[in-house]
Length: 226
Ligand SMILES: C[S@@+](CC[C@H](N)C(=O)[O-])C[C@H]1O[C@@H](n2cnc3c(N)ncnc32)[C@H](O)[C@@H]1O
Image (tube, rainbow, N blue to C red; front, side, top):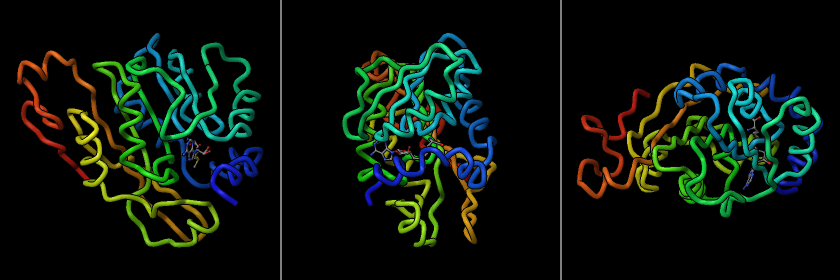
């Protein structure tokens, strides 16, 4: 069974299962790091049943929720039927069904460790950001729990934060960094810490004027507190 079939299969139980894996602290941290503003538009990539989407809607944003699994999106649609302002789109990491430079924010929680090519997925999420838009990812720190690959179809055993930062910089993002999400993912005997990674797509004129180089803030480069 591949990743899509796995998530199609668990869709109806996902919210119950997810609550045992990680708490709302992860979502709160993402929204704080992005400094989300009402009225803006965000994409939730690998949105699943709407964990991040729901938080964004509660803050008054419009959301485009993208996932490979129709069944996960159908669960979200049923659960969040009382909200306006969501568009549901079936799509894949390599070619997101969202036009370029249209999103104020792009979020992805627990998605990166499922995709075939994390650097490519980050490039594609960066493509859909408006200049000035922010990419905020939450995912697992590097770990050694092989069973997650078998039982939960994880492709990657978490990530080194410096690798994720490098991929953000390569994708052309600025003000790049990582931090602790102040939360862990607990699955059976495994407990893995969660990081938040962030970066901003700056206005092209700041780059062409030589004010910024990729990944650099005025005084920091890919600074990690983790
Ligand atoms: C672990 S779940 C997380 C769901 C949600 N973000 C949450 O926090 O509850 C990962 C989600 O990413 C989706 N996904 C995995 N690989 C994908 C890909 N290559 N393209 C699009 N979606 C993908 C899965 O279908 C699944 O819904």
